[in-house]
Amino acid sequence: MKGIVNALGKLSWGKSAYAVFVLYATAAIPLPAQNLTTLYSFDGAHGANPHAALIQGTNGNLYGTTEYAGAGVQGTVFEITPSGAVTTLHGFYGTDGGHPLAGLVQGTEGDFYGTTPTGGANNNRGCAYGCGTIFKITPSGTLTTVYDFCSQSNCSDGWKPTAGLTAEGIFYGTTQYGGDQCTDGGGCGTVFKITPSGTLTSLYSFTGNAAQGRDPAGLVHATNGDYYGTSWGSSSEYNGSCYYGCGTVFKITSSGTETTLYSFCAQVNCTDGGNPSAGLVQGADGNLYGTTDIGGDNCAPAGCGTVFKITPSGTLTTLYSFSGPDGSSPQTTLIQATDGNLYGTTASGGANAQGTVFKITPSGTLTTLYSFCAQSGCTDGAGPEAALVQGTDGNFYGTTYGGGANNYGTVFSLSVDLGPFVETQTTAGPVGSLVKILGTNLTGSTGVTFNGTAAVFSVSASSLITATVPAGASSGKVQVITPSGTLSSNVPFQVVP
Image 1 (cartoon, rainbow, N blue to C red):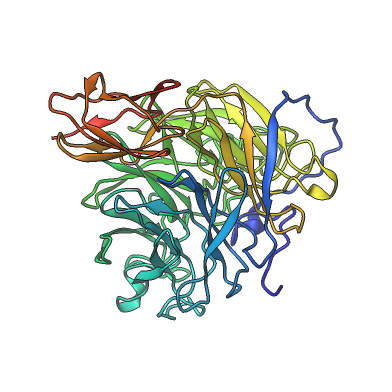
Image 2: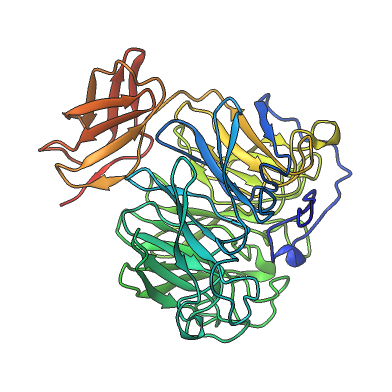
């Protein structure tokens, strides 16, 4: 099918020229026994080459996007049950967006929101195939374009949004290009906020210089109220293998004040890493965790990438440097699971040089959980370029860009024997607000508490409870008493004024 990419060994779109591919002759590292199940192999008709993380919807199913194929051959939005039954909700044709690279977020009203880096109504300033869109899609598959990028003069509103949105009532996001501060390559990117109805406000335009960077990834909303993200490069001089600069970690307030916290390749030979192409996650300890595509103290000359920790004030610690057999080129946002450890994927490396799933403790001890292409013909998948999601059943779910029965990528689940939990759809709210609580087998639940304070609630479905934040509640874990036991939330809920 035209436009479908065979992704064995392929890395992120637009950045593969700077990646390091290594063939490993060493013996495979012994791995702990894990239970990886291929739930679905994409066939082209239902999409191909998923690049983005899945999310769990309020109905308990998983939702995601593919970069290619589908009815319009420009990608799809799909739904998949935990047992592997796939429904294509929408196929992109270009005028409605094209080639989605980011995952979805679900609004409190139940609809999903996402971005496409191409397509849409505008073709300007270098985006010959459309400047990208923000879209809304109902669970049944009705898609509405919320915003067409490059609607403002000289694309000052940005274009090519490759990252997803924050899951809030007002969404925050980034564009890789555009803005009003940098003409290099069509602009150096923006940070924006947008209402569900489509009113977009540009908060910040990157300058591209060494102090501020360019090509920002997605944002994370920290508990202090600020947003944190990474930029992939800058317009500084070539440094090692960072062709357009080595990237930054930045902070931005909700009003648009940007502060660069760290510039990568500050250490000799880039042992601190370079080119962070994925966003950050805030850990339970308040620190931020992320990955870099290249750098570290292994795999000379460019490095196989790193995992790092950075404080909200900007003190960076390199937790781990990949060496190849343990993975190479991590390009995804980490997640912190219910056991307190961080989990992620590498796009290449591992025992079969086609990527891995790994676990790393907050102190930096890494375990390779699975090396892809362990099956003949890589039917188990190859080249995972998306972050994992932990379902409320305790299992991890993810995608591979290539491999599978048709070599168009897969959806997989991975069990590491973690138990079920509950998850609040929003992680903050005032007393009296309604909060949706996602879970598994919630039918028959007899109690809900917010940090120990009982709440009024109703069971909407086996996967969903709606509760009201009770008077006197304080910030902390949400707990649900089910017939099989008490389930706690994976993230504390913040009670705000």
